[in-house]
Each structure stands twice: as structure tokens, then as C-alpha cells.
Image (cartoon, rainbow, N blue to C red; front, side, top):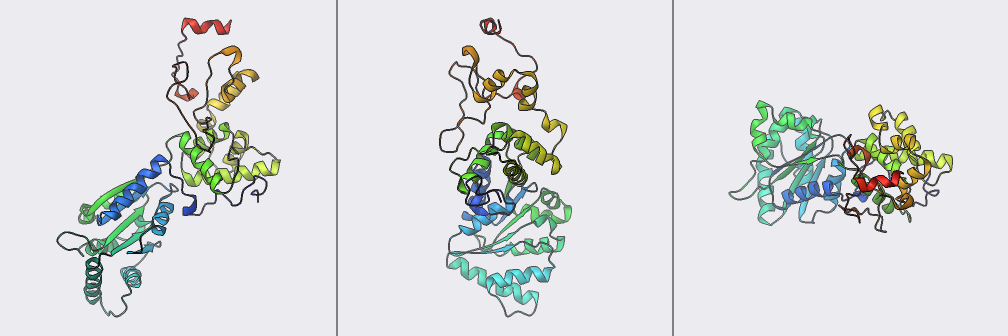
Length: 351
């Protein structure tokens, strides 16, 4: 709808878990590296948890597309399965057709997995939304982990789900399964506005934007506040805000556009509205606002710059710990203490 208006070749903020749009922020890299390590080292049972919308499915699909041809992987996306339906998925993956009962199936499966391991091949089952698996299927998963030799696991299983999965594994009746978990990973929301800015900018670049500075710094700050750093909510806010800006004929998405969209999506609260851009706009003169947000000091005064406005020219933010005058740069008002102490040398700029 707005792609041509903003010079894009594709829609950058769809809600589908498209691995093409994965952004390697520091927090996301940590999870991907952990998953890769677990699969590479054949750890056996891996558990990935994270809040709704943090990008677990996107990470799994990214890994699935990049597995070596020696890895046979099955992806189970519907967790509400009976035991028979679960084994039907597994046997389809392994190409096992001739079995009449569970005992026969497990015998054939053990032989197939042992042969694949002998040939240096890996076998992986990835189960999404695993927090909704029944206790009976989880117990079957524990039994499947018994396919092993003296020094190696013949089958690897990745369970991914919401934080409730941790609670499930802490149940007394599932303690045997819990003890078999070799590696745990946790997908966190983006912790800082800098990571949100990088996420938005890189998705715009992937979508073909020549100039990815489509969102104002104040808009990005508000997106961070309203989305709580959750990628799915960031996508929803950005997509709708770009539609609103397109409708108004604005080439830059403003903070007000984000606020209106956040209201419609029930993502807005008084705490999220209050912030540096909102408060500063009500108490500063226009030239002081320009100094604050654009980094142009008045009469050679001290400059405050938002931590997320610097750019190195390639669409990525750059940040330094100290400014040129040795004072901390990149401060935001919410990071400051209630009491602000001025040195005597700074007072003359208020004369």
C-alpha cells in the first residue's frame, strides 16, 4: 500500500515469521549462537523459551533453512497432537511406513537412527508451541531421548514455547524430562531503544529503502515504549504508522502518528506517553528543542543528543561512551536523576 510512496520494494513489517527479515541484534545473536552450538554439538534436548512475539519461530525457520544437507529435520508446528499423531509426524520424516504397533515402531526407529548416526548424519525434531503439548506426548519425547550410544545422542529434539514451558517442565511428573534438558535458551525483547532502531532500520534496508531514516528519532523512542521491545508489536506499530503517514502525505513518520496508531492498537498508557520527547516539547523554547533533538547547540552550549540518533552512514547507529568534552553523551532525560547538579562554569550560559 505504501511501498512505492516510501521507495520500498517489499513490505518490511509484516507479522509473518519471514527469516529473510531476521536482524542480528546482540540479544538475538546470543540466542542463535546457543541454538547453533546445541545442534552442532548434538546436545540432545534443547529448550527455547520466550514471550509471545519475540521471534522464536523466525529464529527456528532461519536455522532450518541453513542446516547442512546431512541434517534431516522435522518441524512440528501443531502441538495439540495425540501420541499416535505425534509418531505419525516422526515416521513421515524418517520414511518409516511399515509398522503396526508402538513397540514395532520404536524398534524400527532405533535401527534407522543408529544407521544414520553411523553414517555421520544428524536427525532433528523441532516442536513449536511446545508449552501446549500434553503430558503424555512430553513423556514420549523423554523416551525418544533414549535413542543413544555410549557417547552420542542419535536424535536431537528442540522444544520451543512461551515462558509457560518452563513451568510445565518444573512439574513433578515431568522431572525426568527436565533432567534431560542439555541446553536452555531464552528469547528476550529488545532491551534498548538502540536495538529497536537497528531492527527498524535494517528491515527497511532489506525491503529496499535507499534512505532508511523514515522514522523520526522521537517516533522510534515512542515505538520502543509502546512495543516494550517485542518484535511483533514493533512490526504492527511500524506498519500502521507508515500507513497513517502515507495517508497524510508525510515522508517521515512522526511521533504523533505512532501515538495515534498505538491508541488504536491498545498499546498506549500514560506511562508510555510520558518521556523525553513529550515532556521536552512542553517546557522548552523551539530553538532549545532543536538543540535537544538535532544536536545543534545554542551559543556554543553543551549538546544533549538522543542515544539513537547518531549514524555511521550505512544505516547502523553508532554510540560513544563519552562526548568530545569528556562528559557522557547519548543521555536521555529518563536516565537522569531527579536532581541535576551544574558546575559553576556551566552557569554563565543561562545569563
